[in-house]
Image (cartoon, rainbow, N blue to C red; front, side, top):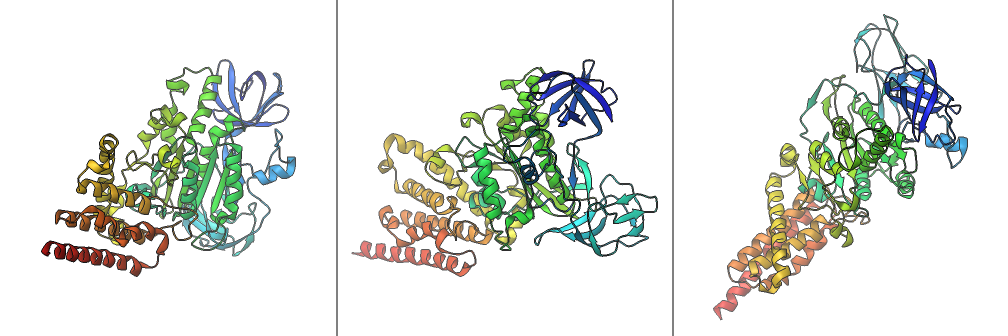
Length: 588
């Protein structure tokens, strides 16, 4: 350890001398209170440190001690179900130690090192091993089997001793190599260093969310990256909550980065009450929460997303699909801006540092679907909320984020004000994963691509017609164009709009999504044909099946495929009857 002393304090940025033997990004203990910090720059004036805790009252001359290692997180069984702050301190322990208001310098064990875990070995003495090799398994929760792996930075070797089946804590050695290297149930990993993998794989499988507007129109793949930009009150957090609960990821990592305290409180109180729809157990059994509110130190906010993505990569290496919810990257970027100002760096657009695009790229590039070092397949999907001031998507964070993601779910304030949720704009949103996941959807239904294209084209036609309607009114349009407006309204209310409080509609299975959209578009096709044959639009609008189309989403359960097919028969029967009536009237 190297010891120095403080010479200058500027908010969360501290300059210290006497740390010449320390390294860049080394963890330090700052001041008499031993606050956690990290060296971020070294020059002739000394070492510049960002402090992760409130340093009010600190004075020049107080000691600084370098611990000689980078900021790392502890990885092992016990992570799931825990609520951490931005530097992996368990908040339940901190509250027990200091009460509701955290005191500077309080410490906490990231993992309970005395807790016993039931371990089943998967390796035998004499076997060769390498980085990522499976040592054994431990049941972390009822939902997740913890696969204990050789750390990615370990050297290959041969097992001399493997612990037999039994109960062990994190301090016990479970694997010892012939060279003398020892491995336990846990290890540490630097948060700013991506965990390695053998190779990246194409993102060909969608992350099924149960949200129709996402899965059918703007899908994200497992291992994909998406951004959810929107102004205040447009539903960014609500959308992420719905995806976290219903998506088919194995593990959820939710990072509350710089959000308001009351909003983060809702997350911390609601998530433990949520029930995993697939198992009926608490969703916290496969969830890690990282809480770093807007009133916490900005330096900890800056590092919180690295903590979250490192935890996600750890479970990815076990072969799991992990979904990371970062809420929000705008607050993280604002923390970068504040620290950059304290460091007296040259600002770029809107005061953000010039390296903002680089930091965003480093974050989103840690997502992906990979072949792990242990030759399994795992993925990290990243869904980052963006909070542009005033809903202005031209601001730097949103624009730079669009460079590094391939799925963009733009939230629309007008939709949110109209209580249309999810308020994802079908005009401004896009997904570049659609072609890559199309083969998976073809197995669900070969018409997926066609239905998706026809629905998007219909909505675009409706947008163009709305501009005309504002000028001359709908009555001036011919029946073919008024039909487009009517069908688009059915698509919006009966397909895109979805209620998280409706027992049937809160999750929509892929097969139901396809059948629901097919029924609506089949109604439109038959109506077009009827209008061309001379049938008036008011008679088509009066058909009872039109109202049924808007109610199907909440009336027909996911498993009732026969009811969905019966609706298609009702559509055919209704238009056949309309055709017969019209022909009789013509004959008279």
